[in-house]
Image (cartoon, rainbow, N blue to C red; front, side):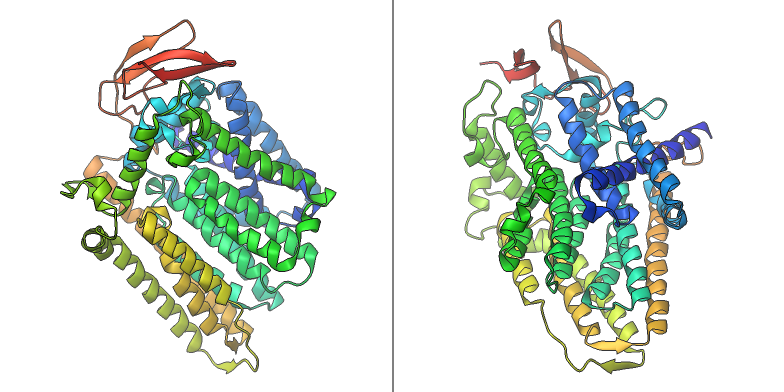
Length: 562
């Protein structure tokens, strides 16, 4: 019972702290953000906490004192906001929504990479300040993600690391808040355009497909953010006035920054705000002093992410060999970077997986569509086809539901979506040629064209606002019910297979691990796991032993022995 109270207390403490940081950020940085809803404040606060965590990691470890002070500040921002506003409807809505989604936060088995480096990476930040050359510990530690830095701030008394999986739950929750709030507001204002239907179908898709928080890792949460990015793009395209364009554009840029900081491949989506800038000739407006603070944060965030990659691996964007500009003592050798880039591409193109590996050499397999036939067999007729058929079925259900209502065709209908289809096609081709795995953006890139097309079909008609209200509420409730049913089934499976006892403790599984010290000096010890994976071993935990300890500026440094 005590474990459950601790679990729930910290979930809401960190949730409200994240929202509080979003509120504080919005008041200080941009007046245009003052009237956002709590979902947007949560996304902004999540981004800001990740950034603060990254900055402070260079100087101090994220221990109980650091994290307590950090989150108390956010919580105070949150409380003062509502005491001043004295409008508790939004707070009640946020608590109600969190409660009906809460079952998703109960996880026993996390994804496979969690034991290998996700847990250990964040835990290392709670026990040590930033260590240069962390990528030498294993290839997993080379792929920096802001999600690990956010999770490191959640290390607190009694709960310790048992909420190092909760970041994806918060992102899913903030997504639900933003979308549901928009749907209800649009109905109230009778503002039923294509973004309304796009939002509704996207909500159903996310709650059904991305229900399993323990499997999100750094992949699926980023894709949820991609849906919001495209929604922002759709909302900006028809706008004419510069002020609302700049406000929506600023939110889009924060979404791209957050998605890219979680998974670097999403830096490519900066193409979307760039197109908006060019289309609306907003260069000089963007440089206006009112946007100086926001521009500074954007530049600082991007630069800091690239520097972190560089100090981890010697590459500004690992494993892109061309970004490995200098040979440093801690650098990953360029030939190894190249081999890992090929390995990731080989894996994404179904060259290998649990229980199988293609007979061709990796560098031969990935060339000239040699991989295509095997990818069709191993990948397409599994996750890809399932996602396609599921999305098509979902879209048909929503289309039929709306078109079965009494309707009237709109007299004039302008299709402004051609550029969106073109962009989705460009991103899809880049995905397909380089990393055609569902976890690298595939879910969204496959689903969005169908969601957009279905939305445009429905948007050709006008309906009774009363009937739209009823059918929208039905689908919102339906998506949340499916989310809960699938999570109940997942928890029952974890009870049967893994012996999960959620009535006794809500905490995820961590086995007892043993490790030994392989190298040390008067400042730091490096540990080696004796149980195959680092899990919650003392840190830094390495899978390699040919290491040496040094220093770079004021920081400890790990490099390889010659």
